[in-house]
Length: 311
Ligand code: UDP
Ligand code: MG
Image (cartoon, rainbow, N blue to C red; front, side):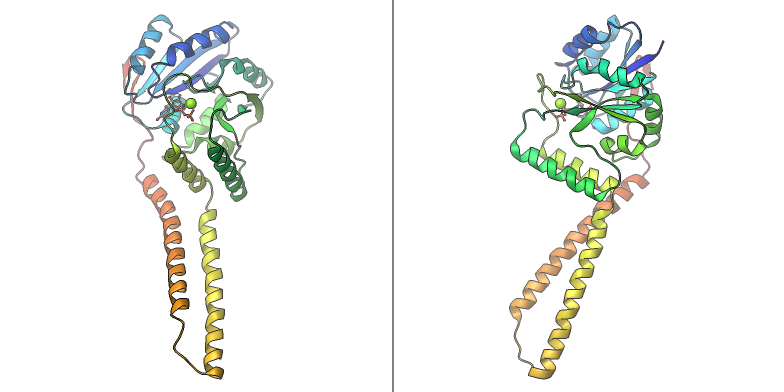
């Protein structure tokens, strides 16, 4: 019998877990044509999430958990999950019930048809401000234009991955992770399904605008070096303009003679160039920072225990 794992990263989700477990029981666990496993990754929760998971495990041995030694962030927690899932395929979902378990049978159907990565695209983006929607749209289209890898829009982490995808993802151990892009990077046969994203009922989202901005920069810097290219081109263009202006001044001085003027031009040019230089140094810095982080070669997460076993 094939085994299906459900991978759920959880950070401060004590309020959502019982409801999540119930809805899994009601929709998918009923099916006995598959063996089921649920793997919770407790990402250093500060509330009683771990106790709730342990209690669930006491009554249902299909539930497993990895406990991380502190909060490593969702992206890293998911890698921990990839390392510990055992199923023939893995379904990743959020703990907050925003991803409906009712979509799972459809995913499994496509998996049985031979697709290796069945991802769910949101029909709606739920309660979000107009500005946030607009920004995210612009961001995706810019990102897409600067890289050859398809990075899908409105597609989150709710997806089914065949074991082969999981094995591939395990090899990608970069520390600053942008998993959304990694799914696309590994390739394999993909299939899209649609779902309506529910609003979070319990607890609160741990991503604020600043966090999203960080994730956005992560996305760009881990998938494309286009900003460096832009810096090069910008430097080139500015140099050419400066050179033409230089020629113009020389010729003007020869034929018309010199008059000491031009304080405003000087100051604008200096400020403009100063700005451009700072910007480019910043861009280079982003990439140098990534190199710094990767060369330290630290593990992406530290797992404290797997089920009852201390690691
Ligand atoms: N999460 C996590 N570690 C974190 C933050 C979030 O494991 O540091 C989990 C969280 O428990 C949830 C999922 O990631 O299962 C999505 O988080 P959230 O609902 O806060 O994000 P949003 O839905 O707003 O994107
Ligand atoms: Mg959520």
